[in-house]
Length: 191
Image 1 (cartoon, rainbow, N blue to C red):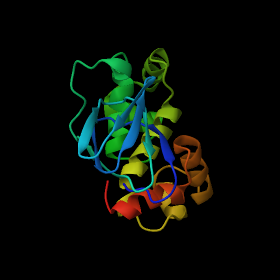
Image 2 (image 1 turned 90 degrees about the vertical axis):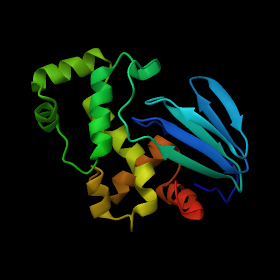
Image 3 (image 1 turned 45 degrees about the vertical axis):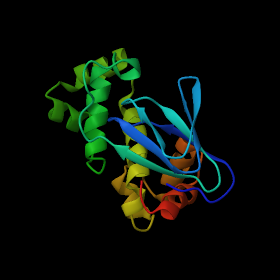
Image 4 (image 1 turned 180 degrees about the vertical axis):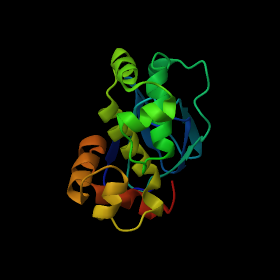
């Protein structure tokens, strides 16, 4: 991911596996749980699974993000430790974001009854609809370099009615337009 313009912040990043973020050129700001740190060139940080964080990018910064495909290690600490069902569902959605996920489909995939799935999510303070939306958006962030044109068909693959709904969701979630987010990836050629 590279940044060519003024300072930019990518908000609300969160992944179901460990993220390794390296400053390849320039430096960036990492903020998580009220903690902010500058990460300088040729330095990297590890972000634990499900930690929600922000990246602050300056002009000319090149950042490389690598995600572990392995399930989150146990025991976890932090936000994922007390939400095992939320963690399991997010991992499933992240692995197959294009699947037509519903409570019924997730119930079948996890072997739980629909009513108990909803109750358990509620007990963990999670919402199936919000989990589905945010997980798909963070997966879109990872997938952007390999995607073609942003059209209605692509929006539908990530669970959005049309391109306009996808663009609104991207802006609400990341604080950037879809084109800005795409531009960050395009300049670097990879994430």
